[in-house]
Image (tube, rainbow, N blue to C red; front, side, top):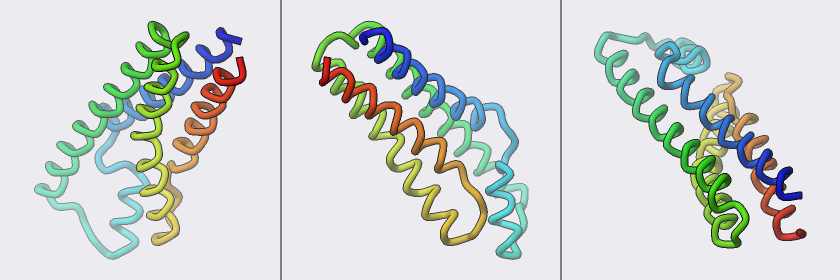
Length: 135
């Protein structure tokens, strides 16, 4: 069971790392952000592009830091109760706001956002925690 928990938590860390790469190396703005801006009749000026690029890269760095933290906690502290709580709370502190904000944005704009990815990662994270408690 310990291996299943570790794999699930490393999967969450990998998902967070992939989200990080999207914002560290991906186009600015992201396609869904561009759709939201264009849908409201707006455009992206040079200054906006620079601000968005800075925000994306900082956000990507934060996602990457979260991914590394989750992976290290899972690998080195995953067998302890405090480690499991740290993994759960660290993951949820990042994933819940991502999911809620993206979900609300999708509902308000009608443009599909990536809230489902964060929701799936939360389900995997919580399932791993519950498996730990059951073991």
